[in-house]
Image (tube, rainbow over all chains, first blue to last red; front, side, top):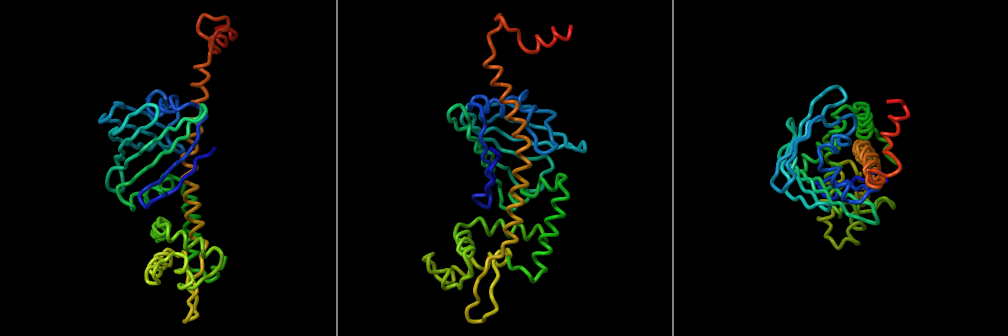
Length: 163
Length: 131
């Protein structure tokens, strides 16, 4: 039931998750501002404003607030709007630390009243992808970062690498 | 430095041949010749892949000058997997809120039509609490 993350190429992250509702409702939850503000936002972040023009070529802008009151904004353009099956949009963060536009493709596949959602996030460069994989850490999960640093230091300095 | 090594790990894992080499090495160490055999690739081509894997810390080479057997190093792989798990958890929280919202939306659709015998739950609650 929980989301499965894979990296099928050096520029992509793919998230797969199943929801107990038909594609019509899941699509609505991804495209209606009154619904988006109720769930969208990872770990401690929530949407505070959400403007969107839901049509191919239409623009959107999301503003989120973080656990410490930080503000983060992302915006872009819808490329494909095919309810309830498919949604393709571009994404750029205001304070983005990697170059180029990210293209996000949501596929909502119906299956016996459920929805299998596959979200493909395609970055302009492999460096951008790798930086984003680190993003959750940069956004406040410092203890994991420390643990990782420690693991990597051990991994590169130690001679007893046999596992 | 830590970040660079992680980048190297992800870059190394992005190639299907290199993933296949790691899978083979998970079964035990092997020489370049042994590794090249099932891939229908030249030894130089395999050596190029091995260099990428070595740089990422995923493979080490034995000291035996003639054989130089390749060995899987599990630790960077685990770090990369942990990283993906953190990324997963990062989004899972949001998706769980979406689960709750979808349950509510479905319940809303299945509710009896207005004017029926059963008042909406909210209205009933307001009545019971005395308004």
